[in-house]
Length: 392
Image (tube, rainbow, N blue to C red; front, side, top):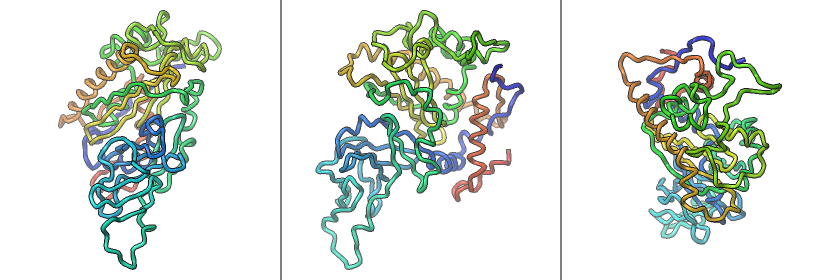
């Protein structure tokens, strides 16, 4: 039985993809409430190591604290609100976070420990001015934060059963060997919708379709093809690489050893996806793993942070190997980015109020229903009071 939609469904209102007030509403109700992946623990090897991360307009410090635990703080001094860390990564010397403005000094545990030059008063208590903490946790080497005062769920419950898809991959033993940041001038939802359908694949991704023949049929899985019947008991019709391919490279071949852990069936498929709506996904191949983080930078701009991961035991990885495993994924991202930017520009038409979804775009419908449910539960903040979720 196919998973396709049996009737045309309406898409979201066009204004939701560029209206600043609606963007702010989504930040408050989704991005500032969900667990968001902000990086990999490999960047925090030693106590005092840190990196900064941005979620919407919030700037966060993530560090390995004095006892080796991962902690996160708003990148804001408690004195008068200055940014504490202008650098994107590094190590806090002597375990101290020092404000570059008036030199207020904090421990890597967030405590205010010194206020040089301040004229003392009887009512000042340093214990009242610790850094604003952000909830932080890790999952299999990836670092997540949650900006909510009280998260609705812990990280494990938030990730849920989606983690089962990559359960057999040795994620804890992998480390990033290469990273690229790709900017796309589109709303975050445009990119997530593009990620969620393959209707565009035959035209936009001819190289990928050679490695993934099912994509040439404008679907992700064989089970989406009308009239598909399972070939064996338990066959779910998932998409797989071509018969002569192993992984996602330009020729489908690999020069890397296969990762330990995946089953023969998982290796034969050539890939598996794990996705966390709407900020993060992993593509696990038999020989390498790739993670992608979506970072909203405004109503019509995102950064994609793409990491390639290999076993830590691999040591230094030569440039030829990196070039080989990056070429096809980055080509796909660049092609998707160009298509997403065209999509974003077209939504500005005065005549275009909303689009429509066709049969194989069922994942978009699920995404839209998820988004509507999240926003229907929201009490719009003051900055978004003008946005009516029901007027269209």
